[in-house]
Image (tube, rainbow, N blue to C red):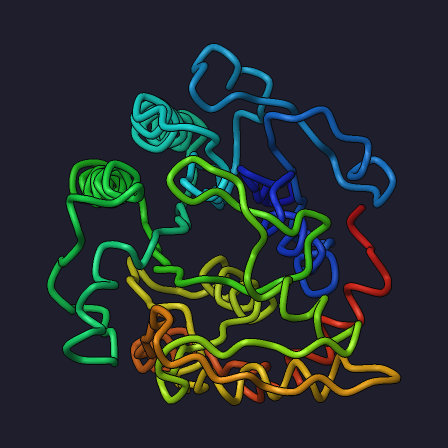
Length: 326
């Protein structure tokens, strides 16, 4: 009998990339993939993957899922970037209660493990003092942000997952995600409940047109530019690794300065006309952080395939041109 891998949040951007990664790497003689999401979708039928529509906040809907699975990959969740306005109950309902429903399903279906996509929002503010964010960095986040209730809900979910391991023996692997770069048909996100263009996509659009690009704040501040396909590699390794638990930062371990980020965009995306940089030091600074990935390298054999920033941009451009998931 094949081992079932159930991917919750499969209709999201990360979920689609991960299903694609599984299709290209998993042994289909041994495993079966089941995609789960809340939306109507014909995409998975087209690629030959079973899709089941389930709202994880509705525990009665889990009867639609198989009663024997090997692994649950939990990528579902409510997040500020997708929330128009502010509805804190959604974070509780989806990120906490939904996670409990998934965990209960894992117990009923004899799952060996759960892999969970956490947020680096719990430690992100440490980077202003120590730019390297470590797995054991102290919890440090603002209580005055549109992300506050979201981060609290994610921390709660992680601790509940740990409880299910201690009491029931359900293996867990927690992946702490910073901003994950990937091409999506959506080029906007929400800040304080209001939709606006993603800065990264805005600069790509400017480069394609050959327009000048503003460089805000301190252009030397660096950020770990993490590509979705490296996240997929980590998720995949957590499915197969022979371990009880793991808690890993997702990243490349390399910081790219804001100036080099924009220069790379110009190099890869400019066409007939080359954009120029306009430095604006009086504008707000961009975030800074580097993710420490030593634990992931040591324990699950992770090696980022897209740590070369230009290589990542070239692949992003290919995805942008092919629009495979639309």
